[in-house]
Length: 317
Length: 284
Image (spheres, each protein chain N blue to C red):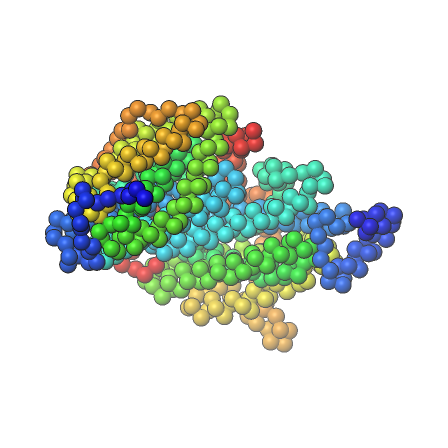
Protein backbone atom coordinates (compact mmCIF):
# COMPACT_ATOMS: atom_id res chain seq x y z
CA UNK A 1 0.00 0.00 0.00
CA UNK A 2 2.77 2.44 0.99
CA UNK A 3 4.58 1.51 -2.17
CA UNK A 4 1.55 2.32 -4.32
CA UNK A 5 1.09 5.71 -2.72
CA UNK A 6 4.77 6.39 -3.06
CA UNK A 7 4.71 5.41 -6.72
CA UNK A 8 1.81 7.69 -7.41
CA UNK A 9 3.91 10.65 -6.33
CA UNK A 10 6.52 9.75 -8.90
CA UNK A 11 6.43 10.95 -12.46
CA UNK A 12 5.74 8.49 -15.27
CA UNK A 13 9.39 8.65 -16.14
CA UNK A 14 10.47 7.77 -12.59
CA UNK A 15 8.06 4.86 -12.58
CA UNK A 16 9.40 3.68 -15.89
CA UNK A 17 13.00 3.87 -14.72
CA UNK A 18 12.17 1.98 -11.54
CA UNK A 19 10.33 -0.62 -13.57
CA UNK A 20 13.31 -1.11 -15.89
CA UNK A 21 15.64 -1.41 -12.90
CA UNK A 22 13.41 -4.09 -11.46
CA UNK A 23 13.26 -6.22 -14.57
CA UNK A 24 16.94 -5.75 -15.32
CA UNK A 25 17.68 -7.04 -11.81
CA UNK A 26 15.65 -10.15 -12.72
CA UNK A 27 12.65 -9.26 -10.56
CA UNK A 28 9.23 -10.50 -11.60
CA UNK A 29 6.40 -8.13 -12.41
CA UNK A 30 3.00 -9.23 -11.09
CA UNK A 31 -0.48 -8.46 -12.41
CA UNK A 32 -1.18 -5.61 -9.98
CA UNK A 33 2.24 -3.94 -10.25
CA UNK A 34 2.80 -0.69 -12.08
CA UNK A 35 3.89 -1.32 -15.66
CA UNK A 36 4.36 0.85 -18.74
CA UNK A 37 1.40 0.77 -21.13
CA UNK A 38 3.72 -0.39 -23.87
CA UNK A 39 4.71 -3.40 -21.73
CA UNK A 40 1.09 -4.23 -20.95
CA UNK A 41 0.08 -3.96 -24.61
CA UNK A 42 3.04 -6.08 -25.71
CA UNK A 43 2.15 -8.76 -23.17
CA UNK A 44 -1.55 -8.73 -24.08
CA UNK A 45 -0.71 -9.13 -27.74
CA UNK A 46 1.88 -11.83 -27.16
CA UNK A 47 0.01 -13.91 -24.58
CA UNK A 48 -3.44 -13.66 -26.17
CA UNK A 49 -1.91 -14.76 -29.45
CA UNK A 50 -0.13 -17.60 -27.70
CA UNK A 51 -3.29 -18.64 -25.84
CA UNK A 52 -5.57 -18.49 -28.84
CA UNK A 53 -2.98 -20.36 -30.93
CA UNK A 54 -3.12 -23.22 -28.41
CA UNK A 55 -6.88 -23.29 -28.82
CA UNK A 56 -6.83 -23.01 -32.62
CA UNK A 57 -3.97 -25.54 -32.57
CA UNK A 58 -6.36 -28.11 -31.14
CA UNK A 59 -8.32 -28.06 -34.40
CA UNK A 60 -5.84 -29.62 -36.88
CA UNK A 61 -5.11 -32.39 -34.39
CA UNK A 62 -8.73 -32.75 -33.44
CA UNK A 63 -9.32 -34.11 -36.93
CA UNK A 64 -7.22 -37.14 -35.95
CA UNK A 65 -8.46 -37.72 -32.43
CA UNK A 66 -11.42 -39.93 -33.36
CA UNK A 67 -9.39 -41.59 -36.12
CA UNK A 68 -6.28 -42.61 -34.20
CA UNK A 69 -5.53 -46.21 -35.23
CA UNK A 70 -5.32 -47.96 -31.85
CA UNK A 71 -6.87 -47.44 -28.43
CA UNK A 72 -3.46 -46.47 -27.05
CA UNK A 73 -3.03 -43.83 -29.73
CA UNK A 74 -6.59 -42.62 -29.24
CA UNK A 75 -5.88 -42.12 -25.54
CA UNK A 76 -2.54 -40.45 -26.27
CA UNK A 77 -3.81 -37.94 -28.79
CA UNK A 78 -6.91 -37.13 -26.72
CA UNK A 79 -4.72 -36.32 -23.73
CA UNK A 80 -2.39 -34.29 -25.91
CA UNK A 81 -5.10 -32.13 -27.44
CA UNK A 82 -6.69 -31.73 -24.03
CA UNK A 83 -3.37 -30.35 -22.77
CA UNK A 84 -3.36 -27.79 -25.59
CA UNK A 85 -6.83 -26.63 -24.60
CA UNK A 86 -5.62 -26.47 -21.02
CA UNK A 87 -2.67 -24.31 -22.06
CA UNK A 88 -5.06 -22.05 -23.91
CA UNK A 89 -7.19 -21.73 -20.79
CA UNK A 90 -4.17 -20.96 -18.60
CA UNK A 91 -2.88 -18.30 -20.99
CA UNK A 92 -6.25 -16.66 -21.52
CA UNK A 93 -6.55 -16.35 -17.74
CA UNK A 94 -3.17 -14.58 -17.68
CA UNK A 95 -4.33 -12.27 -20.48
CA UNK A 96 -7.66 -11.58 -18.78
CA UNK A 97 -5.85 -10.20 -15.73
CA UNK A 98 -3.75 -7.93 -17.94
CA UNK A 99 -6.85 -6.71 -19.81
CA UNK A 100 -8.95 -6.09 -16.72
CA UNK A 101 -7.75 -2.49 -16.12
CA UNK A 102 -8.70 -1.78 -19.74
CA UNK A 103 -12.24 -3.05 -19.12
CA UNK A 104 -11.83 -6.04 -21.43
CA UNK A 105 -12.58 -9.73 -20.97
CA UNK A 106 -12.33 -13.14 -22.61
CA UNK A 107 -15.32 -12.25 -24.78
CA UNK A 108 -13.17 -9.51 -26.37
CA UNK A 109 -10.40 -12.00 -27.07
CA UNK A 110 -12.84 -14.34 -28.80
CA UNK A 111 -14.41 -11.54 -30.81
CA UNK A 112 -10.95 -10.30 -31.86
CA UNK A 113 -10.14 -13.79 -33.07
CA UNK A 114 -13.38 -13.99 -35.04
CA UNK A 115 -12.89 -10.59 -36.65
CA UNK A 116 -9.31 -11.40 -37.62
CA UNK A 117 -7.81 -8.72 -35.39
CA UNK A 118 -6.17 -11.34 -33.20
CA UNK A 119 -3.86 -13.61 -35.16
CA UNK A 120 -3.07 -17.24 -34.47
CA UNK A 121 0.17 -19.02 -35.18
CA UNK A 122 1.08 -19.75 -38.81
CA UNK A 123 1.41 -23.52 -38.31
CA UNK A 124 -2.24 -23.89 -37.35
CA UNK A 125 -3.43 -22.56 -40.70
CA UNK A 126 -1.95 -25.57 -42.46
CA UNK A 127 -3.54 -28.80 -43.66
CA UNK A 128 -3.11 -32.06 -41.78
CA UNK A 129 -4.42 -34.61 -44.29
CA UNK A 130 -2.93 -37.87 -42.91
CA UNK A 131 -2.10 -39.66 -39.68
CA UNK A 132 1.53 -38.83 -40.52
CA UNK A 133 0.65 -35.16 -40.01
CA UNK A 134 -0.84 -35.98 -36.60
CA UNK A 135 2.51 -37.49 -35.60
CA UNK A 136 4.54 -34.72 -37.15
CA UNK A 137 2.62 -31.98 -35.36
CA UNK A 138 3.42 -33.56 -32.01
CA UNK A 139 7.03 -34.24 -32.90
CA UNK A 140 8.23 -31.13 -34.75
CA UNK A 141 5.62 -28.44 -34.16
CA UNK A 142 5.62 -29.12 -30.44
CA UNK A 143 9.38 -29.53 -30.63
CA UNK A 144 9.61 -26.03 -32.12
CA UNK A 145 7.20 -24.75 -29.49
CA UNK A 146 9.40 -26.09 -26.70
CA UNK A 147 12.35 -24.13 -28.13
CA UNK A 148 10.46 -20.86 -28.49
CA UNK A 149 8.72 -21.17 -25.13
CA UNK A 150 11.84 -22.16 -23.22
CA UNK A 151 13.21 -18.85 -24.47
CA UNK A 152 10.59 -17.10 -22.34
CA UNK A 153 10.74 -19.23 -19.19
CA UNK A 154 12.52 -16.37 -17.41
CA UNK A 155 10.11 -13.75 -18.70
CA UNK A 156 9.93 -10.64 -16.55
CA UNK A 157 6.16 -11.04 -16.26
CA UNK A 158 5.70 -13.54 -13.42
CA UNK A 159 2.27 -15.00 -14.32
CA UNK A 160 3.42 -15.74 -17.87
CA UNK A 161 6.72 -17.27 -16.75
CA UNK A 162 4.90 -19.55 -14.31
CA UNK A 163 2.33 -20.64 -16.90
CA UNK A 164 5.14 -21.39 -19.34
CA UNK A 165 6.91 -23.58 -16.82
CA UNK A 166 3.93 -25.91 -16.71
CA UNK A 167 3.30 -25.67 -20.44
CA UNK A 168 6.89 -26.57 -21.34
CA UNK A 169 6.81 -29.60 -19.05
CA UNK A 170 3.72 -30.88 -20.85
CA UNK A 171 5.08 -30.03 -24.30
CA UNK A 172 7.96 -32.41 -23.62
CA UNK A 173 5.41 -35.23 -23.31
CA UNK A 174 3.78 -34.09 -26.53
CA UNK A 175 7.04 -34.20 -28.41
CA UNK A 176 7.60 -37.74 -27.08
CA UNK A 177 4.05 -38.69 -28.07
CA UNK A 178 4.70 -37.35 -31.57
CA UNK A 179 8.07 -39.01 -31.79
CA UNK A 180 6.55 -42.36 -30.78
CA UNK A 181 4.00 -42.13 -33.61
CA UNK A 182 6.70 -41.11 -36.09
CA UNK A 183 9.03 -43.92 -35.02
CA UNK A 184 6.30 -46.55 -35.36
CA UNK A 185 5.60 -45.25 -38.87
CA UNK A 186 9.25 -45.03 -39.99
CA UNK A 187 9.84 -48.57 -38.73
CA UNK A 188 6.68 -49.78 -40.48
CA UNK A 189 5.58 -50.51 -44.03
CA UNK A 190 6.62 -48.52 -47.11
CA UNK A 191 3.23 -46.86 -47.09
CA UNK A 192 3.71 -45.77 -43.51
CA UNK A 193 7.21 -44.42 -44.21
CA UNK A 194 5.90 -42.45 -47.19
CA UNK A 195 3.23 -40.99 -44.95
CA UNK A 196 5.89 -39.48 -42.69
CA UNK A 197 8.11 -38.21 -45.51
CA UNK A 198 5.12 -36.56 -47.15
CA UNK A 199 4.27 -34.88 -43.87
CA UNK A 200 7.84 -33.60 -43.44
CA UNK A 201 7.79 -32.18 -46.96
CA UNK A 202 4.42 -30.58 -46.38
CA UNK A 203 5.35 -29.00 -43.05
CA UNK A 204 8.92 -27.94 -43.72
CA UNK A 205 8.24 -24.39 -44.85
CA UNK A 206 5.73 -23.82 -42.06
CA UNK A 207 8.33 -25.03 -39.55
CA UNK A 208 10.89 -22.53 -40.86
CA UNK A 209 8.26 -19.81 -40.54
CA UNK A 210 7.41 -20.97 -37.03
CA UNK A 211 10.03 -18.76 -35.38
CA UNK A 212 9.14 -15.69 -37.40
CA UNK A 213 11.29 -13.61 -39.73
CA UNK A 214 14.90 -12.86 -38.75
CA UNK A 215 14.26 -9.12 -38.57
CA UNK A 216 11.76 -6.42 -39.43
CA UNK A 217 13.23 -5.94 -42.91
CA UNK A 218 11.53 -9.13 -44.05
CA UNK A 219 7.94 -8.44 -43.12
CA UNK A 220 7.86 -4.81 -42.11
CA UNK A 221 7.29 -5.32 -38.40
CA UNK A 222 8.83 -7.37 -35.65
CA UNK A 223 8.13 -7.31 -31.96
CA UNK A 224 11.30 -9.15 -31.01
CA UNK A 225 13.27 -6.00 -30.12
CA UNK A 226 10.55 -4.84 -27.74
CA UNK A 227 10.18 -8.25 -26.10
CA UNK A 228 13.94 -8.52 -25.64
CA UNK A 229 14.14 -4.98 -24.20
CA UNK A 230 11.44 -5.84 -21.67
CA UNK A 231 13.17 -9.08 -20.68
CA UNK A 232 10.25 -11.16 -21.92
CA UNK A 233 12.50 -13.20 -24.14
CA UNK A 234 16.27 -13.47 -24.53
CA UNK A 235 17.05 -14.91 -27.95
CA UNK A 236 16.22 -13.67 -31.44
CA UNK A 237 14.02 -15.51 -33.93
CA UNK A 238 17.02 -16.58 -35.96
CA UNK A 239 18.87 -17.93 -32.93
CA UNK A 240 15.84 -20.05 -32.08
CA UNK A 241 15.51 -21.35 -35.63
CA UNK A 242 19.18 -22.35 -35.58
CA UNK A 243 18.65 -24.15 -32.28
CA UNK A 244 15.74 -26.03 -33.83
CA UNK A 245 17.93 -27.16 -36.75
CA UNK A 246 20.72 -28.31 -34.45
CA UNK A 247 18.31 -30.36 -32.39
CA UNK A 248 16.09 -31.84 -35.08
CA UNK A 249 18.02 -32.13 -38.36
CA UNK A 250 20.16 -35.01 -37.01
CA UNK A 251 17.03 -36.73 -35.68
CA UNK A 252 15.16 -36.37 -38.95
CA UNK A 253 18.08 -37.84 -40.87
CA UNK A 254 18.64 -40.69 -38.41
CA UNK A 255 15.10 -41.91 -39.06
CA UNK A 256 15.93 -42.23 -42.74
CA UNK A 257 13.95 -39.12 -43.65
CA UNK A 258 15.10 -36.17 -45.72
CA UNK A 259 14.40 -32.45 -45.55
CA UNK A 260 13.10 -30.85 -48.74
CA UNK A 261 15.96 -28.35 -49.02
CA UNK A 262 19.03 -29.39 -50.99
CA UNK A 263 20.96 -26.32 -49.91
CA UNK A 264 20.66 -27.22 -46.24
CA UNK A 265 24.05 -27.69 -44.56
CA UNK A 266 25.90 -26.83 -41.39
CA UNK A 267 28.65 -24.28 -42.00
CA UNK A 268 31.38 -25.12 -39.52
CA UNK A 269 33.27 -21.84 -39.97
CA UNK A 270 30.29 -19.67 -39.20
CA UNK A 271 28.77 -22.21 -36.82
CA UNK A 272 25.35 -21.85 -38.40
CA UNK A 273 22.95 -23.77 -40.60
CA UNK A 274 22.64 -22.50 -44.16
CA UNK A 275 19.13 -22.98 -45.54
CA UNK A 276 16.66 -21.85 -48.11
CA UNK A 277 14.49 -19.01 -46.76
CA UNK A 278 10.76 -19.68 -46.80
CA UNK A 279 8.51 -17.39 -48.80
CA UNK A 280 7.91 -14.65 -46.24
CA UNK A 281 5.19 -13.07 -48.36
CA UNK A 282 3.30 -16.31 -48.04
CA UNK A 283 3.85 -16.11 -44.28
CA UNK A 284 2.24 -12.66 -44.20
CA UNK A 285 -0.73 -13.98 -46.13
CA UNK A 286 -1.12 -17.00 -43.86
CA UNK A 287 -1.23 -15.03 -40.63
CA UNK A 288 -3.77 -12.71 -42.23
CA UNK A 289 -6.05 -15.75 -42.21
CA UNK A 290 -5.40 -16.50 -45.86
CA UNK A 291 -3.67 -19.84 -45.32
CA UNK A 292 -4.94 -23.16 -46.72
CA UNK A 293 -7.17 -23.93 -43.71
CA UNK A 294 -7.51 -20.52 -42.03
CA UNK A 295 -11.09 -19.81 -42.95
CA UNK A 296 -12.35 -23.35 -42.42
CA UNK A 297 -10.91 -23.57 -38.89
CA UNK A 298 -12.00 -20.07 -37.98
CA UNK A 299 -15.50 -20.86 -39.22
CA UNK A 300 -15.58 -24.05 -37.15
CA UNK A 301 -14.60 -22.06 -34.06
CA UNK A 302 -17.15 -19.29 -34.76
CA UNK A 303 -19.87 -21.78 -35.58
CA UNK A 304 -19.39 -23.84 -32.41
CA UNK A 305 -19.26 -20.64 -30.36
CA UNK A 306 -22.59 -19.54 -31.77
CA UNK A 307 -24.15 -22.98 -31.32
CA UNK A 308 -23.39 -22.95 -27.60
CA UNK A 309 -24.40 -19.35 -27.04
CA UNK A 310 -27.52 -20.53 -25.20
CA UNK A 311 -25.41 -22.50 -22.73
CA UNK A 312 -23.28 -19.51 -21.78
CA UNK A 313 -26.44 -17.42 -21.52
CA UNK A 314 -27.97 -20.02 -19.19
CA UNK A 315 -24.86 -20.11 -17.01
CA UNK A 316 -24.71 -16.35 -16.66
CA UNK A 317 -28.31 -15.96 -15.45
CA UNK B 1 -26.75 -52.63 7.06
CA UNK B 2 -29.13 -53.39 4.26
CA UNK B 3 -27.51 -55.40 1.53
CA UNK B 4 -27.93 -53.49 -1.69
CA UNK B 5 -27.01 -56.13 -4.20
CA UNK B 6 -27.41 -59.83 -4.41
CA UNK B 7 -26.85 -62.43 -7.04
CA UNK B 8 -28.82 -65.38 -8.26
CA UNK B 9 -31.72 -65.28 -5.78
CA UNK B 10 -29.51 -65.78 -2.77
CA UNK B 11 -27.86 -68.92 -4.09
CA UNK B 12 -24.19 -69.06 -3.23
CA UNK B 13 -22.30 -68.69 -6.45
CA UNK B 14 -18.69 -69.72 -6.62
CA UNK B 15 -16.18 -67.10 -7.70
CA UNK B 16 -14.63 -67.84 -11.04
CA UNK B 17 -11.10 -66.74 -11.77
CA UNK B 18 -10.92 -68.01 -15.33
CA UNK B 19 -12.99 -69.71 -17.98
CA UNK B 20 -11.97 -73.23 -16.98
CA UNK B 21 -14.40 -72.85 -14.07
CA UNK B 22 -17.36 -72.14 -16.37
CA UNK B 23 -19.62 -74.24 -18.52
CA UNK B 24 -20.04 -73.26 -22.17
CA UNK B 25 -23.28 -71.36 -21.59
CA UNK B 26 -21.77 -69.35 -18.75
CA UNK B 27 -18.77 -68.51 -20.87
CA UNK B 28 -20.99 -67.47 -23.76
CA UNK B 29 -23.14 -65.12 -21.72
CA UNK B 30 -20.13 -63.65 -19.90
CA UNK B 31 -18.65 -62.73 -23.26
CA UNK B 32 -21.95 -61.20 -24.26
CA UNK B 33 -22.03 -59.04 -21.15
CA UNK B 34 -18.43 -57.94 -21.65
CA UNK B 35 -19.16 -56.84 -25.21
CA UNK B 36 -22.03 -54.72 -23.93
CA UNK B 37 -19.80 -53.09 -21.32
CA UNK B 38 -16.88 -52.49 -23.69
CA UNK B 39 -18.90 -51.30 -26.68
CA UNK B 40 -21.01 -48.95 -24.55
CA UNK B 41 -18.03 -47.04 -23.20
CA UNK B 42 -16.09 -47.16 -26.44
CA UNK B 43 -18.77 -45.58 -28.60
CA UNK B 44 -19.79 -42.94 -26.09
CA UNK B 45 -16.13 -41.99 -25.54
CA UNK B 46 -15.91 -41.61 -29.31
CA UNK B 47 -18.98 -39.36 -29.37
CA UNK B 48 -17.43 -37.34 -26.57
CA UNK B 49 -14.16 -37.00 -28.46
CA UNK B 50 -16.03 -35.41 -31.35
CA UNK B 51 -16.80 -32.51 -29.02
CA UNK B 52 -13.12 -31.78 -28.47
CA UNK B 53 -12.47 -28.11 -29.18
CA UNK B 54 -16.19 -27.38 -29.57
CA UNK B 55 -17.52 -27.50 -25.98
CA UNK B 56 -19.45 -24.46 -24.69
CA UNK B 57 -16.37 -23.05 -22.96
CA UNK B 58 -12.70 -23.85 -22.70
CA UNK B 59 -12.88 -25.09 -19.12
CA UNK B 60 -15.55 -27.62 -20.12
CA UNK B 61 -13.47 -28.71 -23.06
CA UNK B 62 -10.67 -29.71 -20.70
CA UNK B 63 -12.98 -31.44 -18.21
CA UNK B 64 -15.00 -33.31 -20.85
CA UNK B 65 -11.82 -34.55 -22.46
CA UNK B 66 -10.71 -36.08 -19.15
CA UNK B 67 -13.98 -37.94 -18.93
CA UNK B 68 -13.65 -39.20 -22.50
CA UNK B 69 -10.17 -40.47 -21.78
CA UNK B 70 -11.40 -42.28 -18.67
CA UNK B 71 -14.24 -43.87 -20.62
CA UNK B 72 -11.98 -44.94 -23.45
CA UNK B 73 -9.71 -46.41 -20.78
CA UNK B 74 -12.66 -48.31 -19.28
CA UNK B 75 -13.55 -49.67 -22.72
CA UNK B 76 -9.94 -50.81 -23.10
CA UNK B 77 -10.11 -52.69 -19.79
CA UNK B 78 -13.31 -54.48 -20.82
CA UNK B 79 -11.88 -55.32 -24.26
CA UNK B 80 -8.82 -56.68 -22.46
CA UNK B 81 -11.05 -59.07 -20.50
CA UNK B 82 -12.43 -60.25 -23.84
CA UNK B 83 -8.96 -60.67 -25.25
CA UNK B 84 -8.08 -62.76 -22.19
CA UNK B 85 -11.07 -64.97 -23.00
CA UNK B 86 -9.71 -65.57 -26.49
CA UNK B 87 -11.88 -63.10 -28.42
CA UNK B 88 -8.93 -61.47 -30.21
CA UNK B 89 -6.66 -58.46 -29.80
CA UNK B 90 -8.05 -55.36 -28.09
CA UNK B 91 -7.53 -53.16 -31.14
CA UNK B 92 -9.23 -55.60 -33.46
CA UNK B 93 -12.18 -55.75 -31.07
CA UNK B 94 -12.34 -51.95 -30.92
CA UNK B 95 -11.67 -51.11 -34.57
CA UNK B 96 -12.25 -54.21 -36.66
CA UNK B 97 -15.84 -55.25 -35.83
CA UNK B 98 -18.75 -54.22 -38.00
CA UNK B 99 -21.95 -52.57 -36.87
CA UNK B 100 -24.00 -55.77 -36.65
CA UNK B 101 -21.43 -57.32 -34.28
CA UNK B 102 -21.54 -54.39 -31.87
CA UNK B 103 -23.47 -54.77 -28.62
CA UNK B 104 -23.61 -51.19 -27.41
CA UNK B 105 -26.96 -49.59 -26.64
CA UNK B 106 -28.28 -47.57 -29.56
CA UNK B 107 -28.68 -44.42 -27.45
CA UNK B 108 -24.91 -44.20 -27.05
CA UNK B 109 -24.16 -44.38 -30.78
CA UNK B 110 -26.54 -41.61 -31.84
CA UNK B 111 -24.87 -38.50 -33.26
CA UNK B 112 -24.30 -35.50 -31.00
CA UNK B 113 -26.43 -33.56 -33.43
CA UNK B 114 -26.58 -32.87 -37.16
CA UNK B 115 -23.41 -32.11 -39.09
CA UNK B 116 -19.90 -33.53 -39.12
CA UNK B 117 -17.39 -33.02 -36.32
CA UNK B 118 -15.22 -30.94 -38.66
CA UNK B 119 -17.88 -29.16 -40.66
CA UNK B 120 -20.83 -27.19 -39.37
CA UNK B 121 -21.47 -29.41 -36.36
CA UNK B 122 -24.84 -28.50 -34.88
CA UNK B 123 -24.08 -30.46 -31.76
CA UNK B 124 -26.71 -30.49 -29.06
CA UNK B 125 -25.26 -29.76 -25.63
CA UNK B 126 -28.56 -30.47 -23.85
CA UNK B 127 -28.75 -33.95 -25.40
CA UNK B 128 -25.11 -34.54 -24.52
CA UNK B 129 -25.60 -33.55 -20.88
CA UNK B 130 -28.74 -35.66 -20.46
CA UNK B 131 -27.37 -38.69 -22.29
CA UNK B 132 -24.12 -38.61 -20.33
CA UNK B 133 -25.80 -37.97 -17.01
CA UNK B 134 -28.39 -40.73 -17.32
CA UNK B 135 -25.85 -43.18 -18.70
CA UNK B 136 -23.29 -42.37 -16.01
CA UNK B 137 -25.92 -42.82 -13.31
CA UNK B 138 -26.71 -46.21 -14.81
CA UNK B 139 -23.03 -47.06 -15.14
CA UNK B 140 -22.45 -46.24 -11.48
CA UNK B 141 -25.16 -48.69 -10.43
CA UNK B 142 -23.90 -51.27 -12.88
CA UNK B 143 -20.35 -51.02 -11.53
CA UNK B 144 -21.49 -51.27 -7.92
CA UNK B 145 -23.17 -54.52 -8.87
CA UNK B 146 -20.21 -55.76 -10.92
CA UNK B 147 -17.92 -55.25 -7.94
CA UNK B 148 -19.59 -58.40 -6.61
CA UNK B 149 -19.49 -60.26 -9.91
CA UNK B 150 -18.86 -63.98 -9.76
CA UNK B 151 -16.22 -63.47 -12.44
CA UNK B 152 -13.35 -62.14 -10.37
CA UNK B 153 -11.41 -60.38 -13.17
CA UNK B 154 -14.56 -58.40 -14.00
CA UNK B 155 -15.13 -57.54 -10.34
CA UNK B 156 -11.53 -56.24 -10.17
CA UNK B 157 -12.03 -54.00 -13.20
CA UNK B 158 -15.33 -52.70 -11.78
CA UNK B 159 -13.55 -51.51 -8.64
CA UNK B 160 -11.16 -49.41 -10.74
CA UNK B 161 -13.84 -48.04 -13.03
CA UNK B 162 -16.08 -47.18 -10.11
CA UNK B 163 -13.50 -44.86 -8.57
CA UNK B 164 -13.50 -42.60 -11.63
CA UNK B 165 -17.24 -42.60 -12.20
CA UNK B 166 -17.75 -40.70 -8.97
CA UNK B 167 -16.31 -37.61 -10.63
CA UNK B 168 -18.09 -38.16 -13.93
CA UNK B 169 -21.41 -38.37 -12.16
CA UNK B 170 -20.71 -35.22 -10.17
CA UNK B 171 -19.78 -33.42 -13.37
CA UNK B 172 -22.88 -34.37 -15.37
CA UNK B 173 -25.25 -33.94 -12.49
CA UNK B 174 -23.93 -30.40 -11.96
CA UNK B 175 -24.54 -29.56 -15.61
CA UNK B 176 -27.98 -31.13 -15.52
CA UNK B 177 -29.06 -29.21 -12.41
CA UNK B 178 -27.64 -25.91 -13.65
CA UNK B 179 -29.21 -26.02 -17.08
CA UNK B 180 -32.61 -27.35 -16.09
CA UNK B 181 -33.10 -24.50 -13.65
CA UNK B 182 -31.42 -21.71 -15.63
CA UNK B 183 -34.04 -20.09 -17.88
CA UNK B 184 -36.96 -21.06 -20.11
CA UNK B 185 -34.82 -21.63 -23.16
CA UNK B 186 -32.49 -24.02 -21.35
CA UNK B 187 -35.41 -25.72 -19.62
CA UNK B 188 -37.13 -26.39 -22.94
CA UNK B 189 -34.01 -27.77 -24.51
CA UNK B 190 -33.35 -29.98 -21.49
CA UNK B 191 -36.91 -31.32 -21.35
CA UNK B 192 -36.75 -32.20 -25.04
CA UNK B 193 -33.46 -33.98 -24.41
CA UNK B 194 -34.89 -35.92 -21.44
CA UNK B 195 -37.71 -37.16 -23.67
CA UNK B 196 -35.24 -38.08 -26.42
CA UNK B 197 -33.06 -40.05 -24.02
CA UNK B 198 -36.01 -41.86 -22.39
CA UNK B 199 -37.19 -42.88 -25.84
CA UNK B 200 -34.02 -44.94 -26.20
CA UNK B 201 -33.03 -45.83 -22.67
CA UNK B 202 -34.70 -49.25 -22.45
CA UNK B 203 -31.93 -50.48 -24.70
CA UNK B 204 -29.28 -49.28 -22.25
CA UNK B 205 -31.01 -51.08 -19.39
CA UNK B 206 -31.37 -54.31 -21.37
CA UNK B 207 -28.93 -57.24 -21.06
CA UNK B 208 -30.10 -58.63 -24.38
CA UNK B 209 -31.61 -62.03 -25.25
CA UNK B 210 -29.61 -63.91 -22.59
CA UNK B 211 -30.25 -61.48 -19.79
CA UNK B 212 -31.65 -64.10 -17.45
CA UNK B 213 -28.64 -66.40 -17.87
CA UNK B 214 -26.21 -63.51 -17.34
CA UNK B 215 -27.76 -62.76 -13.96
CA UNK B 216 -28.18 -66.42 -13.00
CA UNK B 217 -24.48 -67.04 -13.44
CA UNK B 218 -23.93 -64.29 -10.91
CA UNK B 219 -22.01 -62.03 -13.27
CA UNK B 220 -24.25 -59.08 -12.39
CA UNK B 221 -27.54 -58.39 -10.59
CA UNK B 222 -30.79 -58.95 -12.42
CA UNK B 223 -31.83 -56.41 -15.03
CA UNK B 224 -34.96 -55.49 -13.04
CA UNK B 225 -32.95 -54.63 -9.96
CA UNK B 226 -30.55 -52.35 -11.81
CA UNK B 227 -33.47 -50.71 -13.62
CA UNK B 228 -35.34 -50.06 -10.37
CA UNK B 229 -32.29 -48.55 -8.73
CA UNK B 230 -31.64 -46.32 -11.71
CA UNK B 231 -35.25 -45.11 -11.77
CA UNK B 232 -35.14 -44.48 -8.05
CA UNK B 233 -31.98 -42.37 -8.31
CA UNK B 234 -33.39 -40.25 -11.13
CA UNK B 235 -36.79 -39.85 -9.53
CA UNK B 236 -35.24 -38.17 -6.49
CA UNK B 237 -33.37 -35.72 -8.71
CA UNK B 238 -36.39 -35.09 -10.93
CA UNK B 239 -38.56 -34.28 -7.92
CA UNK B 240 -36.05 -31.71 -6.72
CA UNK B 241 -36.36 -29.80 -10.02
CA UNK B 242 -40.09 -30.40 -10.58
CA UNK B 243 -39.60 -32.57 -13.59
CA UNK B 244 -41.96 -35.44 -14.25
CA UNK B 245 -40.44 -38.68 -15.50
CA UNK B 246 -41.72 -39.59 -18.96
CA UNK B 247 -43.98 -42.54 -18.41
CA UNK B 248 -42.46 -44.93 -20.87
CA UNK B 249 -38.82 -45.87 -21.31
CA UNK B 250 -38.53 -47.12 -24.87
CA UNK B 251 -36.27 -48.51 -27.59
CA UNK B 252 -37.19 -46.23 -30.45
CA UNK B 253 -34.29 -46.55 -32.89
CA UNK B 254 -33.02 -50.08 -32.46
CA UNK B 255 -31.92 -52.89 -30.17
CA UNK B 256 -28.19 -52.64 -29.78
CA UNK B 257 -27.80 -55.66 -27.49
CA UNK B 258 -29.13 -57.78 -30.35
CA UNK B 259 -27.00 -56.09 -32.99
CA UNK B 260 -29.74 -53.89 -34.47
CA UNK B 261 -28.14 -50.48 -34.91
CA UNK B 262 -28.65 -47.18 -36.68
CA UNK B 263 -26.64 -45.79 -39.59
CA UNK B 264 -25.08 -43.40 -37.11
CA UNK B 265 -23.02 -46.31 -35.81
CA UNK B 266 -21.88 -47.45 -39.24
CA UNK B 267 -20.71 -43.92 -40.07
CA UNK B 268 -18.95 -43.57 -36.71
CA UNK B 269 -17.15 -46.90 -37.18
CA UNK B 270 -15.88 -45.94 -40.59
CA UNK B 271 -14.44 -42.70 -39.19
CA UNK B 272 -12.88 -44.18 -36.07
CA UNK B 273 -11.28 -47.06 -37.95
CA UNK B 274 -10.20 -45.11 -41.04
CA UNK B 275 -6.48 -45.21 -40.25
CA UNK B 276 -6.64 -48.71 -38.75
CA UNK B 277 -8.13 -50.01 -42.00
CA UNK B 278 -5.30 -48.60 -44.12
CA UNK B 279 -3.39 -51.65 -42.89
CA UNK B 280 -4.87 -53.63 -39.99
CA UNK B 281 -1.74 -55.80 -39.79
CA UNK B 282 0.66 -52.87 -39.47
CA UNK B 283 2.11 -51.58 -36.24
CA UNK B 284 0.77 -48.07 -35.65
